[in-house]
Image (cartoon, rainbow, N blue to C red; front, side, top):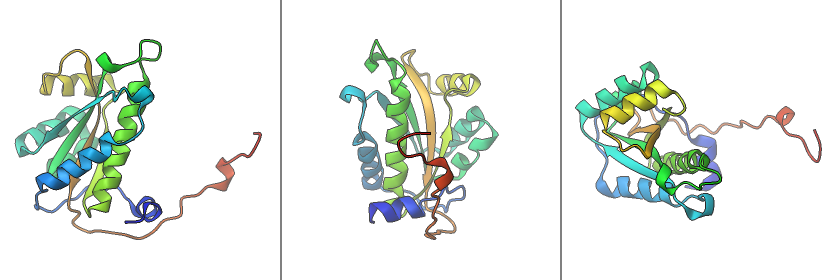
Length: 173
Protein backbone atom coordinates (compact mmCIF):
# COMPACT_ATOMS: atom_id res chain seq x y z
CA UNK A 1 0.00 0.00 0.00
CA UNK A 2 1.21 3.49 -0.78
CA UNK A 3 2.37 5.29 2.38
CA UNK A 4 0.15 8.33 1.90
CA UNK A 5 -2.86 6.13 1.16
CA UNK A 6 -2.11 4.12 4.32
CA UNK A 7 -2.01 7.32 6.37
CA UNK A 8 -5.25 8.61 4.83
CA UNK A 9 -7.20 5.34 5.29
CA UNK A 10 -5.93 3.98 8.62
CA UNK A 11 -8.61 3.99 11.29
CA UNK A 12 -8.87 2.64 14.80
CA UNK A 13 -10.60 -0.75 14.76
CA UNK A 14 -12.41 -1.90 17.88
CA UNK A 15 -14.35 -4.91 16.58
CA UNK A 16 -12.53 -7.94 15.23
CA UNK A 17 -13.38 -11.25 13.58
CA UNK A 18 -12.29 -14.55 15.13
CA UNK A 19 -9.55 -15.03 12.51
CA UNK A 20 -6.06 -15.34 13.94
CA UNK A 21 -2.84 -13.75 12.71
CA UNK A 22 0.04 -15.72 11.25
CA UNK A 23 3.47 -15.70 12.85
CA UNK A 24 4.82 -14.09 9.67
CA UNK A 25 2.33 -11.21 9.91
CA UNK A 26 3.15 -10.71 13.60
CA UNK A 27 6.88 -10.70 12.79
CA UNK A 28 6.32 -8.21 9.95
CA UNK A 29 4.40 -5.91 12.32
CA UNK A 30 7.10 -6.15 15.00
CA UNK A 31 9.84 -5.56 12.44
CA UNK A 32 8.05 -2.38 11.35
CA UNK A 33 7.96 -1.26 14.97
CA UNK A 34 11.67 -1.91 15.33
CA UNK A 35 12.44 -0.07 12.08
CA UNK A 36 11.47 3.42 13.22
CA UNK A 37 13.89 6.12 14.25
CA UNK A 38 15.03 6.04 17.87
CA UNK A 39 17.01 8.48 19.96
CA UNK A 40 20.70 7.77 19.31
CA UNK A 41 19.60 4.34 18.08
CA UNK A 42 19.10 3.27 21.70
CA UNK A 43 15.97 1.30 20.75
CA UNK A 44 14.42 1.94 24.16
CA UNK A 45 11.52 -0.46 23.74
CA UNK A 46 10.49 -4.05 24.35
CA UNK A 47 7.32 -5.86 23.33
CA UNK A 48 5.14 -8.62 24.72
CA UNK A 49 2.92 -10.36 22.15
CA UNK A 50 -0.20 -11.76 23.81
CA UNK A 51 -2.24 -14.43 22.02
CA UNK A 52 -3.95 -16.05 25.00
CA UNK A 53 -7.60 -14.91 25.22
CA UNK A 54 -7.67 -15.08 29.01
CA UNK A 55 -4.58 -12.86 29.23
CA UNK A 56 -6.06 -10.45 26.67
CA UNK A 57 -9.09 -10.15 28.95
CA UNK A 58 -6.88 -9.47 31.94
CA UNK A 59 -5.02 -6.80 29.95
CA UNK A 60 -8.33 -5.10 29.19
CA UNK A 61 -9.30 -5.06 32.87
CA UNK A 62 -5.87 -3.85 33.97
CA UNK A 63 -5.87 -1.02 31.46
CA UNK A 64 -9.39 0.21 32.14
CA UNK A 65 -12.74 0.47 30.37
CA UNK A 66 -11.33 2.03 27.19
CA UNK A 67 -9.20 -1.08 26.63
CA UNK A 68 -12.15 -3.41 25.99
CA UNK A 69 -11.23 -3.93 22.28
CA UNK A 70 -8.20 -5.97 23.34
CA UNK A 71 -10.62 -8.64 24.63
CA UNK A 72 -11.86 -9.22 21.08
CA UNK A 73 -8.50 -8.91 19.30
CA UNK A 74 -6.55 -11.77 17.76
CA UNK A 75 -3.46 -10.50 19.58
CA UNK A 76 -2.37 -7.68 21.80
CA UNK A 77 1.08 -6.17 21.71
CA UNK A 78 2.24 -4.52 24.90
CA UNK A 79 4.69 -1.77 23.96
CA UNK A 80 7.11 -1.04 26.81
CA UNK A 81 9.93 1.35 27.46
CA UNK A 82 13.25 -0.04 28.64
CA UNK A 83 14.78 2.42 31.11
CA UNK A 84 18.09 0.54 31.11
CA UNK A 85 18.55 1.73 27.52
CA UNK A 86 17.55 5.33 28.26
CA UNK A 87 19.92 8.26 27.92
CA UNK A 88 21.03 9.51 31.34
CA UNK A 89 20.71 13.13 30.21
CA UNK A 90 17.26 12.61 28.64
CA UNK A 91 15.66 9.51 30.17
CA UNK A 92 12.13 10.28 28.95
CA UNK A 93 13.01 9.83 25.27
CA UNK A 94 11.84 6.23 25.73
CA UNK A 95 8.28 7.57 25.46
CA UNK A 96 8.98 8.90 21.96
CA UNK A 97 10.77 5.74 20.87
CA UNK A 98 7.82 3.64 22.05
CA UNK A 99 5.32 5.96 20.34
CA UNK A 100 7.14 5.74 17.01
CA UNK A 101 7.33 1.96 17.27
CA UNK A 102 3.59 1.75 18.02
CA UNK A 103 2.73 4.02 15.09
CA UNK A 104 4.87 1.98 12.72
CA UNK A 105 3.17 -1.21 13.90
CA UNK A 106 -0.38 0.08 13.34
CA UNK A 107 0.62 1.27 9.86
CA UNK A 108 2.23 -2.08 9.02
CA UNK A 109 -0.87 -3.90 10.27
CA UNK A 110 -3.04 -1.66 8.09
CA UNK A 111 -0.86 -2.41 5.07
CA UNK A 112 -1.39 -6.15 5.73
CA UNK A 113 -5.17 -5.67 5.95
CA UNK A 114 -5.13 -6.10 9.72
CA UNK A 115 -7.07 -3.69 11.90
CA UNK A 116 -5.69 -2.15 15.07
CA UNK A 117 -6.37 0.28 17.86
CA UNK A 118 -3.83 2.01 20.10
CA UNK A 119 -4.64 1.92 23.82
CA UNK A 120 -2.56 4.07 26.14
CA UNK A 121 -1.13 2.96 29.48
CA UNK A 122 1.56 5.53 30.31
CA UNK A 123 1.42 8.08 31.98
CA UNK A 124 -1.66 6.85 33.89
CA UNK A 125 0.06 5.40 36.95
CA UNK A 126 -2.81 3.07 37.92
CA UNK A 127 -2.74 1.46 34.46
CA UNK A 128 1.05 1.26 34.46
CA UNK A 129 1.06 -0.49 37.84
CA UNK A 130 -1.74 -2.92 36.93
CA UNK A 131 0.00 -3.94 33.69
CA UNK A 132 3.38 -4.20 35.42
CA UNK A 133 1.85 -6.56 37.98
CA UNK A 134 -0.04 -8.61 35.39
CA UNK A 135 3.12 -9.33 33.41
CA UNK A 136 5.53 -9.30 36.37
CA UNK A 137 7.64 -6.71 34.56
CA UNK A 138 11.10 -5.88 35.87
CA UNK A 139 11.55 -2.43 37.45
CA UNK A 140 13.28 -1.02 34.34
CA UNK A 141 10.39 -1.93 32.00
CA UNK A 142 7.50 0.57 31.79
CA UNK A 143 4.22 -0.20 29.97
CA UNK A 144 3.61 2.45 27.33
CA UNK A 145 0.63 1.22 25.31
CA UNK A 146 -1.30 -1.76 24.07
CA UNK A 147 -2.03 -2.45 20.43
CA UNK A 148 -5.11 -4.58 19.83
CA UNK A 149 -4.81 -6.26 16.44
CA UNK A 150 -7.06 -8.47 14.33
CA UNK A 151 -9.15 -8.50 11.19
CA UNK A 152 -11.86 -5.84 11.27
CA UNK A 153 -15.47 -6.99 11.23
CA UNK A 154 -16.24 -4.07 8.92
CA UNK A 155 -13.15 -2.95 6.98
CA UNK A 156 -13.30 0.68 5.80
CA UNK A 157 -10.72 2.13 3.40
CA UNK A 158 -12.45 5.49 2.98
CA UNK A 159 -9.81 8.20 2.62
CA UNK A 160 -10.00 11.13 5.00
CA UNK A 161 -8.47 14.57 4.71
CA UNK A 162 -7.60 15.61 8.24
CA UNK A 163 -5.58 18.69 7.32
CA UNK A 164 -6.44 21.68 9.54
CA UNK A 165 -4.91 24.80 8.05
CA UNK A 166 -5.71 26.94 11.08
CA UNK A 167 -3.26 24.83 13.12
CA UNK A 168 -0.32 25.49 10.81
CA UNK A 169 1.97 28.52 11.00
CA UNK A 170 4.78 29.36 8.62
CA UNK A 171 7.89 31.18 9.77
CA UNK A 172 6.19 32.72 12.83
CA UNK A 173 3.12 32.30 15.04
